[in-house]
Image (cartoon, rainbow, N blue to C red; front, side, top):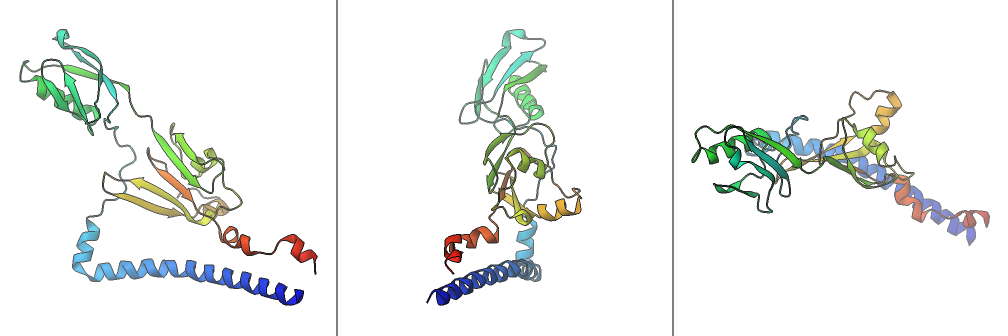
Length: 240
């Protein structure tokens, strides 16, 4: 009876491994089929062309609710304002001109917006803006890393470096399919899969992407960690 039970366990393990392998092998074919069908359909191809792509890495910071900035007038200091706060609705209240929408603007765009607002009461105002309090750049690491969480993004950090900052891979990590999610705008987000295992094995990190502010990396579980719960314990093996 024990021998029969042992054989059943082994058969279950082999069946689980073969099923996982077949599912993973079918994924590239599914992607390829999807791509082919979209290109053969002019409407689908047109829609695909409208999907946003990853933005340039050196993009300018955009004003968010909760940010504050100092506003200075070179020729009209009576309008100077310190620690102007961006309200939750994205507006600021400015002396002499009232509410002005500033959320989502870069500092040069904000400068032009405020110049236009004050141009109604001042002749060609010369202003300068200094951000005082703003959202610090960050990235998020999730999944099978040592310390999942939100981390400050300081300087140039690549994907492999971000994984190391988050505690590195765990025993359950799938090194070959690390996902990097990036928000493109309020409606779109994109994701790419990176084979970190292959990069490290070759010793070639040319394909190691830089992390952008707000990115999230996700490390999935490997196949062994998925079938581990059904593998007989050491005690069962010792009984035979």
